[in-house]
Length: 412
Image (cartoon, rainbow, N blue to C red; front, top):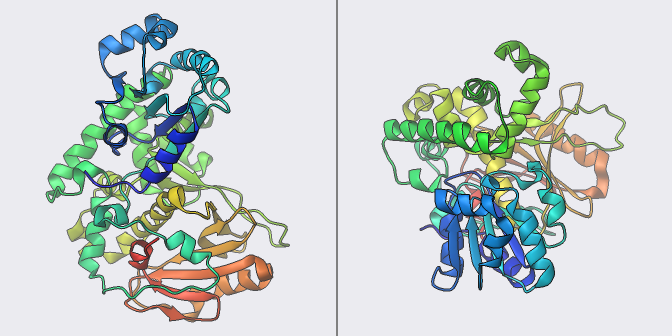
């Protein structure tokens, strides 16, 4: 089992709230984490993937909850939304913290009446595939380091390009980290997506054309790290735009895809408002695109979108346990100026992050960061270019080029 960096926050939530929900895509390690955290000897464990348990819950949710004693783990709760009203009634009678630890493979906010029924009673945390630090046994502190008064990047060992490509192709699903056969990885991902699209999506809604979802996921993979354009997707897929938006919401609800919103400000320049599209894991992305480590070695240009998706997802994972808790945005103007990722902390301070596949950084690579720094003044904390080089290089007091491995080798 890989130690998860979200564990400390999960413990804090259990000490404070009567209901804690750990959600995230299937096979990211939710069940393993919650069972290791509470211990099945102290907590009753039920999974709604068990037909008998599901039947009992759907027949009489209040009766099922009333029959539970002590701390309880309820796995895959999205399969029975009616359970949440019964939990609300139980919690209103007894608000002791740590009573119910839930897991779900769908975003509860898309389930009818769920978000309202446990408002103020439930804390929600999201578990993503393994971060690079979790694979290496490190609690990463890169996000917090970016907002520190001074940036002191650690000395890092050089990262071979082949090692970087392997990380991109491997991804972070726990079951695949030690699988070296790319053929077996592809087979696993094919089975994985089929299971989600045919089972979990049906749990959320009645859908007419289930066969369209795998095709849509492939189209989205080909557009990862680009702006989400429903009109273009509708033309390419032949799916009406209104239906397409509903299908996309289902893929987003099952944590297969996510978006990074455009950053808006009162700067005089007009900004593009479309969100940026990401897949939850570069292993899934590479499998969907038919990319292998050998193909990346033959044509490194193919690695650009993979690397950007990789970096943005690693940052998204680290935000989950960071002290700063910034929000993620992308920056792009109508004139074509863009920054891959902006982080904005609750005080409105900004960090800009650019991602480059090359082993060198030129003045032109930091120009937009410099322009944004001048526009924002004191609000701009720092800009960094993560690149496939070996050294940390300052371009100015606030702008740095950093080796890509600094991302997961900066300890908390």
